[in-house]
Length: 308
Ligand SMILES: Cc1cc2nc3c(=O)[nH]c(=O)nc-3n(C[C@H](O)[C@H](O)[C@H](O)COP(=O)(O)O)c2cc1C
Image (tube, rainbow, N blue to C red; front, side):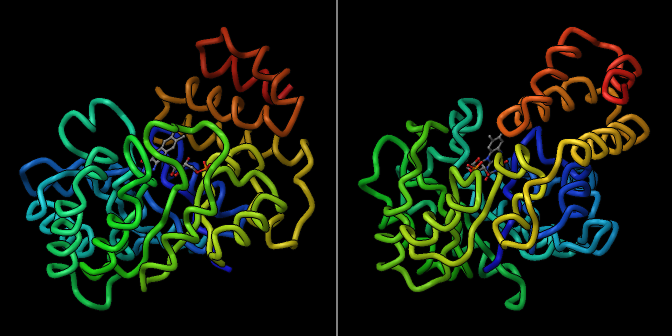
């Protein structure tokens, strides 16, 4: 079973990837999306979203990282995909799932699921441009408004030469509301001939098993679940017990150090509150800590509370 850490814009940045891949159990990470407009994006944009490129495309603990691109212009996506690979990305992923209004308004992300032909042309252009030995992959939802084009979209992606496809088992309209329709992944999988990775609503080992059974997929991607339980990947693999709170607290302190002394210090208060929000799902102590720091704005004060 391969477990991929999901891309999460504004949440899973390189520091979080570093933390979670140190905890372990992940085979691959995907970056937050690089939004491609009609230009070859400057190298600094790639380095900002994926500093691991300066480390051969690996997190400090050695997990490969793949850059994700989002956009609507096939040729520009292709040029930028080539740049991502040249800079050291391990393959390149195309985002056909982002629900954000601003992104959809400019015809990027999930809105493209209304146009299977456009998606097909994008994947084809990128596949043709990127060296064969590098994977070109895509990530889609089941549709925009409904699931009527789910199979057609996946087939268009496969026929264009994608190496694999992650399916987040919900439409754009369904947002992040449970359930995830894992059985739909199985339906799609029957109709396409490339490896499929199942994604959505995996919070524990039992969810992972149910998802694998219902989707008929061995490989999975996890996002929010890994933020709620940092060693979820190893728990799913049956290699570790639920991480005790003391260890989570150590991670929080370590994360604080990274955030405060790295280049992203100004984001720290929001980022750590956001993570505590996810952790609260698994740990009552996280909720208590969140309540203690939620009104604090000063990083040093927040860190003091965490270390208390
Ligand atoms: C805050 C947030 C940001 C996200 N950003 C991205 C993104 O940049 N690219 C992408 O393909 N999916 C993105 N997603 C979707 C996740 O990768 C994943 O498909 C979704 O959260 C379902 O998986 P989960 O239930 O394991 O979290 C994001 C999700 C969330 C909650």
